[in-house]
Image (tube, rainbow, N blue to C red):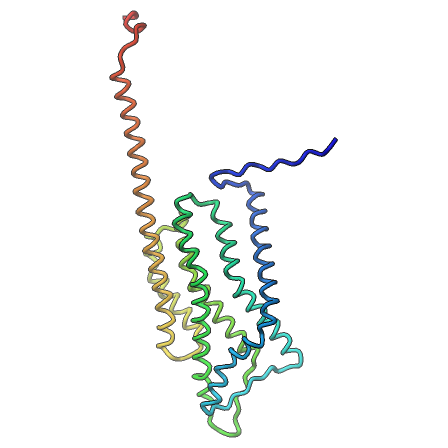
Length: 289
């Protein structure tokens, strides 16, 4: 006898899944992200020379200003390790759209249809916000390099030999950190749409969030310039308040929808009682009297 084909379990219209189905879904999403990162890392290997020329621009500007600065790898195997490391960073940045898309697909089944329409626009903004944050992080490092090199003593016997792997770690940390910081408000909106976090709760924590943003920028910005720190903090605080405003507006819409549902249910109960009172008596009831 031919082996019967295993029938798939019909998909729940409300997106409910068992624990095993959730784990399978999570595994598939992680696999998609991993494959994308590997492919983009391979692509990053081939664009390494162009990226390297772009990243050493701050040092060229410092040398043009008369500063004595030299890039040093510090070992025979470091050029290969640096190229692999930079390729991985490039692959991670290029894979960010796919990673955000897979996160969206994983959490979408837990949302109602109207919440999906409401949140999809904000997830669509997550990709450009992440890229803007990466550009802001690079701009910050690009501005910091010449400024920090100016503290090198102006002497023909002194040369600032810069460890390039260390510079690459600083650059990648700044770029990815600001990219994640700029996209964090999108996840706040997502948590609000899922009913995990209310807009009023986010608003109550605005002082702590502002303090955390300033501390984060102070740690990540390696320059003593306060204007750069304030200029990098203001966009993050503004995005946070935008997320708070959107969440509060969504909470009000949800409350109005619940009030309408409650009023409809109350009206239906009253109508049923009125119909029962106004209904004519049956012939059996008249005979029993």
